[in-house]
Image 1 (cartoon, rainbow, N blue to C red):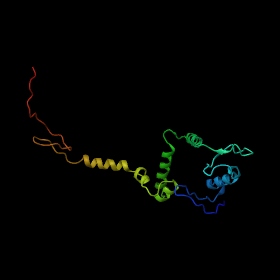
Image 2: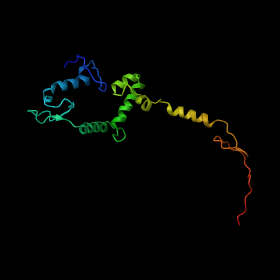
Image 3: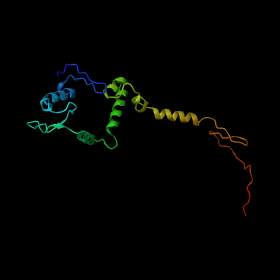
Image 4: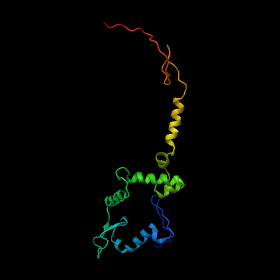
Length: 179
């Protein structure tokens, strides 16, 4: 595998590019790691993960894929170390927040959907996650317009009206003494 080789990926795989400065490029680092551990992966099934256990085992007999729960724990520990409460901010929420932030910073929705593995054929991201930043202000403006409408008074013979203003009232039915 070379870095210049075109890698064919499926529809739900991320497509990352390489940063010019090799020393800080996470794509290059992962590629180098995969190259260095290629021999150690030969006995593993084709659907093995990137991260391996017992990687220093000389005869490769103990090497296996790291379990999903282990990677989840690493992620949780990293979030905690960064001052983020992992109970409040799950991986799903972080993915959504990062996607929204990318769009707000000028990335196209299509680019974000490809990069973050959102379906290109569905509008889930746009419909449920990508909401206008000023949605609250828009809601307040609409409420203000509705509530500032002129109110109508309820008088004798009026049916239900949800926009009722306050008026002076007088008892239409006299009180019956209960004694």
